[in-house]
Amino acid sequence: MYFIEWFAWLAAIDPKEKREAFKKQNKTIKNRGVYENEDEEYVAAAKKSVCETPKSRGPVYVYNEHVLEMRCGMWEDKRGLISILSLTVILSAAFNLWIALGGIEKLNNLISNDKPYGEQLFMSLFFLGISLILAVPYLMYGLRLTRLEMFTSRHLLIRFNRTTQQVYLHRPVYCGGIVTLPWNGVSSSGSDKKYAPPGGMGMPLELTWSPVFTGTLRPELIWVGRSANNFAELQAEWEFIRRFMDEGPEGLPPPHITSHFPWPWHAFTPQFEGLTHYFRNSSRVLKCGLLLLSPAFLIIGTGHWVSLLLCWKPRWPRIIREAGLPGKPIPALTTVDDYPPHIQERLRENAYLWAIRPGKRPERKPRVSKRRPKSQPNIEKDAPHEVDSIDQP
Picture 1 (tube, rainbow, N blue to C red):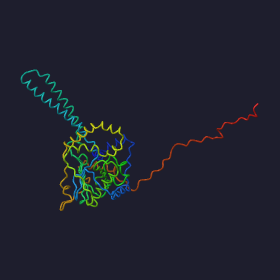
Picture 2: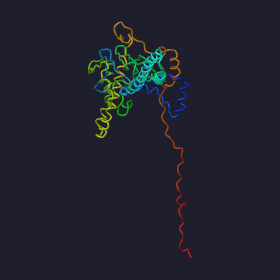
Picture 3: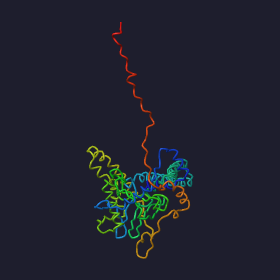
């Protein structure tokens, strides 16, 4: 499911009018931005070794002396629900259209034989109307959501080429398209605990390129491999990639190579990525509840498999496939000029949203309460006067 990547691309090319309207409706959302010293810190941390046991949990599709190719993208385990809903609408519209066409054929026979055809005419128009009611709104608004899972590339891919010291992202055009990035300039959530999600659980390894290194006036953010059960898995995955690019494949444990063919287990296993640690530490009651929910996992997994079957294997351009081979050209890094003119205009217009701010982040001033301190009661003034019993009559 490419929802996050699609949403990020739409945010990068969002018209100014829509962006201003969104800001007015969400005044509490503030862009903290990234400062120059923070960006340098991220990149410097990614150059250091983070663990002694590098290991890739994959999926890895290509691995040799020069190239490491892996699956990337967020929410791969959520893939399937949109496919089920889309197929329900598509099949319903097709079934009603089939009935309507059969009715029209019967209608022609009745008319040619001078028989009453009023009832058949009504039924044909009825089923044709249902088909149009389902198909027209779906083609106008629903098809773009379907293409996040179906009728598109089977997976998002990331290819590391240590010979050219470049990284290539393979995404559909509506998610930003194919991008060539420099290896120098990458930062990672596996390089330090403070850049990772709490506990490192439930999310894949995150790789980021700031606008300083992308050439597209926007940051590039991608999630690589499987969701992690803990921060140690993020560290091991990142160390595997870092050593491959900086030192070579020598000494690295060879990863399991995954086929691009959509086997059924490729659809069901992603649903449990990043949940092993959670399952082990859960109570018996929760485990029983998850067991009762197993039919839902089965339904989503089936939809996931259908989506894989209805997608095609992503294919790299020839220049990227041959990059690093003797005598072959090195792909140029992607820049704003590689996009159509209307996309270039939007990227330049929105560049200020992602620009790295110079210097250091200013220190936060301690918050001073505007409330006045409560006045302390005057004990002498407020204490009741004692009455001298001698002066009493």
